[in-house]
Image 1 (tube, rainbow, N blue to C red):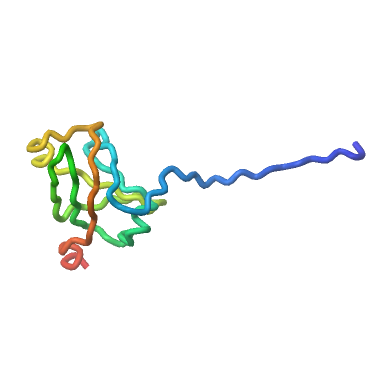
Image 2 (image 1 turned 120 degrees about the horizontal axis):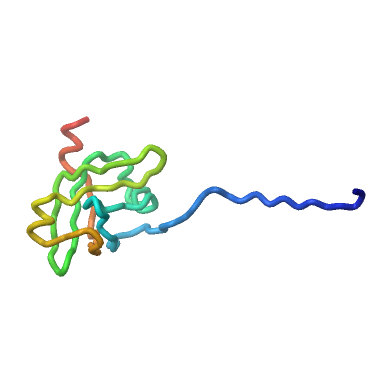
Length: 115
């Protein structure tokens, strides 16, 4: 086996799904009535350390303000999810698969009370 060259390529395991760095951002509501905030947007807004946030959504022309929603996190990523409250879902008819637009995410006063 003289003169045989073997070329090995190493693939990166890092997978880039969303490269969102600014708001507003349109996203689908999951079947469990949660909304995903991608890791790139969380890092760009600097909200990775927050537990609670005030979120403004737009749905079918209505601007909905959610105060003190809990930002759920997974163990190995900066992405966050939050649940749309039942009273909001019932009032505005938000269901899974619907597209909502996140207008703003800002720290909630609740963060100061918990720390």
